[in-house]
Length: 404
Image 1 (cartoon, one colour):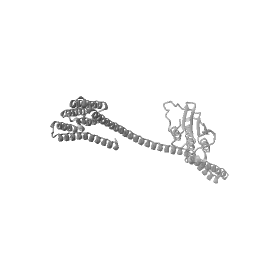
Image 2 (cartoon, helix red, strand yellow):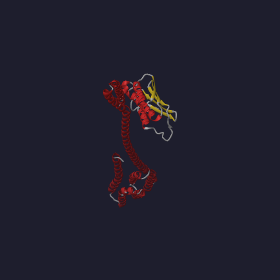
Image 3 (cartoon, helix red, strand yellow):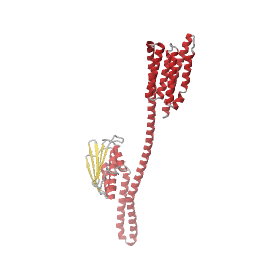
Image 4 (cartoon, helix red, strand yellow):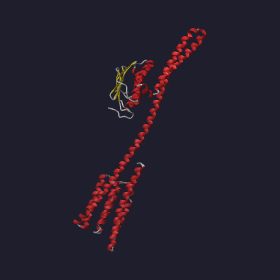
């Protein structure tokens, strides 16, 4: 249990303790006042009350040892109370002690066993009242004590159920805290993995594009320097080639920088950004993309960025896994929804096969789309290619509810 649950349980336990001994004290005070008024003190009732008190003091020890010992104690206490009822006929209030016993019954025993004991208490107090006062008068006294036994027993069970529920709630809260901790660790690992993958991708692209171009520039510059001494007529052509390589390097560098600045997607327009990206993919990877657009481009930055990143990742998968050099991208804006489809006629894969689990890239696309309240569908057939379809509300904002 948590600290609050332990505190509450301790308070309830103290309340039951005070209720038990308050009822016992009320019986003792009334017996003493009655005896004082009559001018006589019978030793047997007080001896029985002393025995009842001594037995009460061993309850904590018994409850920690065995349920059977608790039931033996309850039986002993019930017999002592029954004997009290028979000592002085005018002392019907000894039956109040059965009410005191009903609280430890509900706190220490299972519900069914507790009900049996409460029923036994009711029968014993009715029998004791009848033996002491006769049938009509005994039956007249008994109902109020029976009601007290039942009410206090129900109160004890209510406390027990509340403590059980509170303990379960604390367990669930602890499990949730642990799950949240694991989620935070997973999120950190996923972020680190995504960062590492992005760095590796940029390193590959720098090596495959800009680095190679700069290397060619260096060779051309060396050739131009040599030609100045040996064949100055070739220098002009080499310098023109050097200038062309410099323009290519600048273009490729700007493309890489643009990919690192997703906010420019909304500024330059999704269609324009995609067209530039397709041109880069064809030049860099040899991937030819057939691109069609329907409707007027609209939507906020989260929507446009998600569509661009989804297309980008889908084409990455085509280059790496599809085994084809062509793909078809269709972008449609209609009403309150934007739709994107990316298709290829590559080798595809078996979605129901042993490796049907989504890759990190597919999972990232799905999470990005569904976080905006959109839907993501993937279909693939071995030998027939792969089809990705995305639908996102025009007014999408992060944290939206996914559509069915």
